[in-house]
Image (cartoon, rainbow, N blue to C red):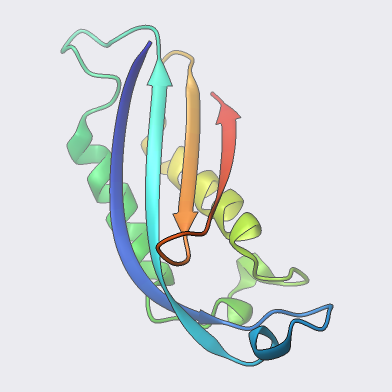
Length: 125
């Protein structure tokens, strides 16, 4: 099984809703790190899972879109608590649509909200 991964950092704001989480209910920011990972058994004719430049471009587009935003105000989070679990699923969908890896494999997005806490969303493609 082959694996390729790219990561980028961004800062975004949010506040949690639907429960009493103390200070997390107030607007605050996190220095998020987004890591995208592709895994598959087969490489393309160039010896790639996906051209890493394509992954970098699509991940940068996600960073540009979500960076410096209030996640709660974005349409992707309408009706959702902007947890890192939801954030990782939303980013995974955007990246998978943009990268469109060939063949079949596993695609995951891990989002760190600080040095010790992260959530991930994993899907087969």
